[in-house]
Length: 298
Image 1 (cartoon, helix red, strand yellow):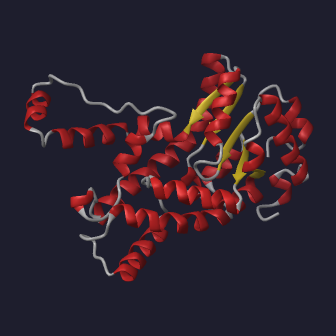
Image 2 (spheres, helix red, strand yellow):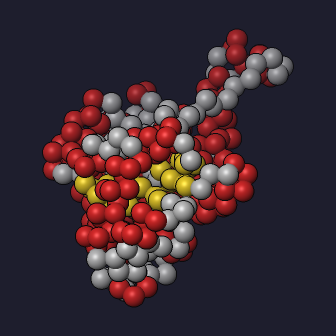
Image 3 (cartoon, rainbow, N blue to C red):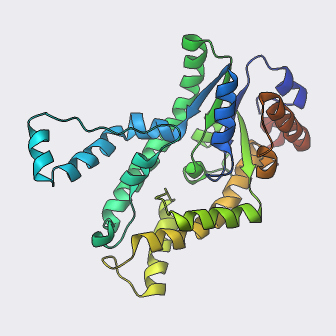
């Protein structure tokens, strides 16, 4: 860890932190609070994915749909209209829409092969966006003069790393420059996230082996085939399993690469000073051990 003790964190002239965990537990809340307070640069991994790495794919998907409408087709062919994604830190719908859901095409589903292609595109984009984090630390300081830096990572960060590998290229790169902080949810949070997702199911990125197994199990359980799977029903069914699948991965990331805080404590943070106290406490609870000394499985 780049901050070995609570005092190291409190006294640092330049604080650099990355929040990870399931979407909906407070990562963006903290990042927005810090940015609004001033002196903090907010780097959103999902925003970077949706603009730098998948922006063209997203826009092309919009255009593909527009080309099916004769009126819009003619306008596009004559360069009379411009179609682009309006993705923001707080509205990542264009990225989610592009990822899509597998299943019945009459209900907006993709073939599983096309879905896997888009999943693979997201994986490559997420790894690249995570590697870009360090470049943006330097950019934030050199270009804008921000001494402090917060990285708001996507919920799927645990799917593109191996937290048990001390040489993992993504985690070793990040941990050398930022404090990794897991926002850990309780069972009550998990139930709330599942209920929220059930009301408005969203596309997600899944590790290939997990996704393939879930797709096969869902069809075997329901008797549906690729062309008849209800896309929303499948992602609802998969989401609860994804939460259980990700929990030990997040825990290993915190254990081997950083610290953890509780989501209920995050919800009480109202200022950078509150966050300083919360993170200082997490570092103290860990014992302040640097990972290089503690080893990858401390």
